[in-house]
Length: 100
Image (cartoon, helix red, strand yellow):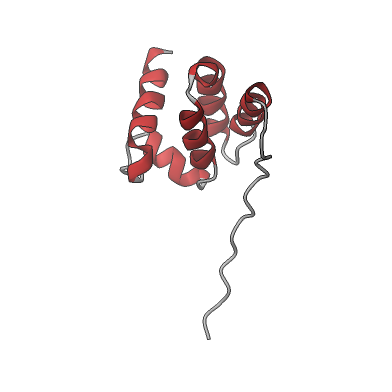
């Protein structure tokens, strides 16, 4: 018999959430990660980029934040290729890191 797989519950994404509230929620999720390096990288990125993202971009970023922090760190640092939907987002995050 296989062991049960634990799946982290997906954070609430309120239906009809106002854009400003959504950006604040995503900024908070960017700051409160499991790895300090990702806290720093994503909180700076969120501060500089979220307000200019399209609604589709915000949805993609929201999905990105659902991924495991260790995977995110390896993608952003170039250790592993990101999942296909996140390739351009990861490139943008990497460009943001190299500017700072």
